[in-house]
Length: 176
Image (spheres, rainbow, N blue to C red):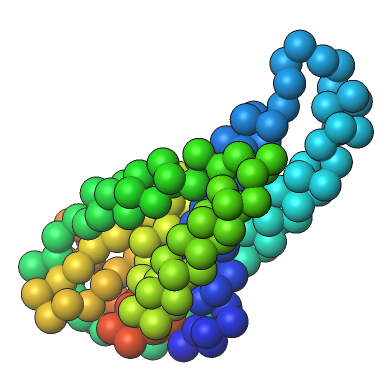
């Protein structure tokens, strides 16, 4: 099972596309590359650090050992929930204006509240990186969440399948 600290890191990683979007937003295409880096060095270093943390945190799901078995029945694809979550919270955060302290405080508070909810509710599977890296999110009839690169047909009613339990009723299958 994942610790709360690791869930926080997964929350941070769920916004990785936002970090790229913000880098583009802060980049002045009228200026030279190195001038941009110099003028926005704090923002770029901060965002690149978040991207690095995101990638390293997410790698766990690729390399973790499958150490138990469980069965799933009547699973449904829930990838659309990831997109809904992502779009709902990404739009307000892209309005960040680094020149206004109110904008920074409001976005920080929004990010903090979403993060607390995300960690306390074990919603770490609502991470856009799963979709971007080929994982699917499924939920079965018993409300078990499955993160897998396998198709629903290869999981649904197939008997015991090798998994890694990463949360209460949350499992990963990282082998195709």
